Image 1 (cartoon, rainbow, N blue to C red):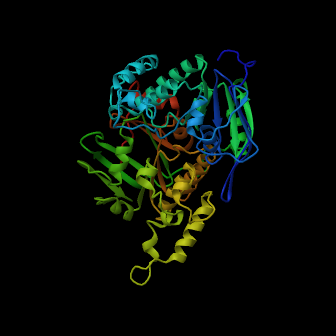
Image 2: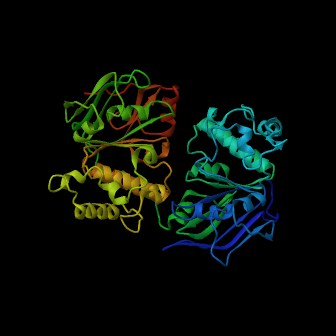
Image 3: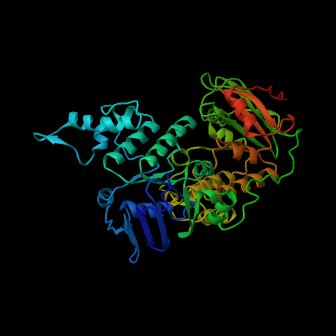
Length: 515
């Protein structure tokens, strides 16, 4: 970033508050953004980041008393069109494109060009070409959005913002659905836009991204402004302290006793699906946290789904406590003591329109049903209240819909449902994806506590620090195969560098032979 410390701020928000019925979402929050900077906005889920940005975008109206200035002049943002007219554009985590329309039609949506009473598509396509070339797009303005990848659709969102002459671009968790290569390309583009003078507000939970991109970082906590750090002052310890208000020196938990190599709680033998997963075998020990690492597309999720009987397998079997078990359906797996936390909590895990209580009790309600199937609502309430307390789920009461909770609290609701089964084996697929650092710490505590009680835990994660920090032993997958082992009794230390070497094929280690 060029030295713009003497520049007039392009955006100033002062004394911004927002009250919803029964909830004070923001209290006297301030934010100052300079032209040509990447300004990171951080905080736990529920800290108020999205609420503040929705006020900036015109989606929410703030409480009386605050002020928003654009280029030093007071601005009235009473709706999305007003925000757009002032040069504000927001790219949300869930993209807002129409797949059935072309790229040009999406860029011009709501302000189409017309000629003779008809939409002038050729002129729209021609006008979009320069911007798409500027962004390095490998598709045309005529391409249907339905044909584009997630990364390419993000480019369309950015093109739409630039075409509307946006000067303030807000990006909310933009890398969540992207591969590492797509993320690198996005970072290159973001730096290019910064060099052109665009002010970028960047929201992310990923510390590595903040270090790599940001010029300054502002932190919110519990709806309040905590402070702003210059790039030179950034450190993990300081940021964590600001975000959670407490010391997380013991962020990753490995406080359980070493696992017993003689007690195999689950054995997987020759697991294959005929497509992605090929002849995978391993043992999981009681009280062990076993990490499964690998690049995107290596087959980690597919292996987990085969074990849990979500998908059909062409070969392989599962043993529990040394005895083969027949697993044809997920219910068979649950009855055998195996539970699986999906990586897609919203699409495949939770019922977002149902209450926290109903979601927690979904798998356990039959245990205490009375009179031939009548639900025991008193026990359901007790179970939900106990889970809310034990897992520190932030919710006013158990009747609140799960869809209204932050990502971290949604994940803990889903996890609490699985724990009610009292599993022998817990498979966690990307357990901290899209959750804030405080919720991550609590999930790591839960993993550690389960291992201390003798549960075998499998953690599948794309975040290598998470794998290294939580796992007693790590298996690495590449192209559907288990290609190496770190930690445990293999004698190899668990390091990010060693995992990457195995995952990319630059190194290969023999796996310890399963019993």
